[in-house]
Length: 364
Ligand SMILES: Nc1ncnc2c1ncn2[C@@H]1O[C@H](COP(=O)(O)OP(=O)(O)OP(=O)(O)O)[C@@H](O)[C@H]1O
Ligand SMILES: [Mg+2]
Image 1 (cartoon, rainbow, N blue to C red):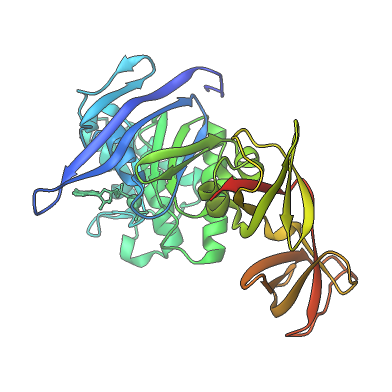
Image 2 (cartoon, protein in one colour):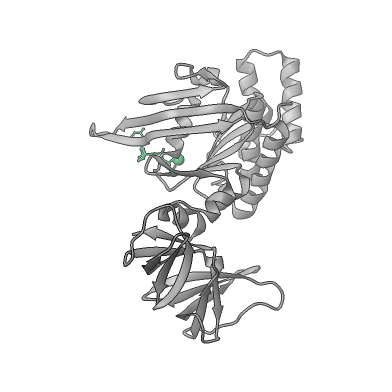
């Protein structure tokens, strides 16, 4: 079985896709993106609705022809290869199963199109049914399965084609929270076991963070940042990424001093030193300070920054606090390890500390 290696596998080069809407106006769905995916990697396209994720995936699958740019698979240009011949099955949110075919027939469908023998089909279907826990359900119809089981059939139907790459378009969106978590693990397990390359679309950041080797953050048809989950979470390169992936709080601040390695900003007349970003800043410049909820420490001791507790929500392992701060609101999240849970009253004056290394300065 093929394992992860460092080979460039799927390469998108300067891909642009322009649609014409009903009135004949052009819509730039994907705007000159380039992306290299390594063999065996799990790569996620993450971004808000309408940013071009599905369009990118459909260009890769061959369901849409790009307006400009090249798609290369394993060193071969595939711009002119029809979708059917790309062997890149896609798993959708809506499962897209055939309602009048049994589970066995649904999974076997692609193999029948390939005119494989009955025996090969029976063996291959049995193997993938086992892999995704569908044994015993082969004679049922899709309508007789739960949403999670139907999604596993959709996955089996893709796996049975023995693809080197599978495309996923928000496959878990129709499942409830618990099932979504389970199916997440299931998909990841099979993908790793078989060493399949995965290109996965979602707008759920926790899904992206937990499943991916690489995350590609998209915004308005462009790539905003590419990196490992940890890298993107800890070092977002723009306020857009910080907001999207870390649910960051944005606080107004002023640059007080530009040093060689650090930048000093003031908030509520107090100074904070921040690691110097790549961009140039000037003294007196108004900026955003992005602070993750888990980097906001709340206490009653009268040091630090002043805020007022608005609401606290106990969420089991964590408690989330909404705090009025500088005519706006910020969120703090604390983990409730035994004995450390903090109780504050609504409307109470609280003091905040921002844990260093967890904030970034961005241009306004
Ligand atoms: N066939 C089409 N004709 C015209 N415009 C289209 C077409 N398909 C997509 N678009 C437009 O292209 C842009 C990108 O759409 P796309 O479906 O790729 O977004 P997405 O990131 O998948 O969003 P979502 O998270 O809502 O699924 C949107 O503005 C959309 O309206
Ligand atoms: Mg989409």
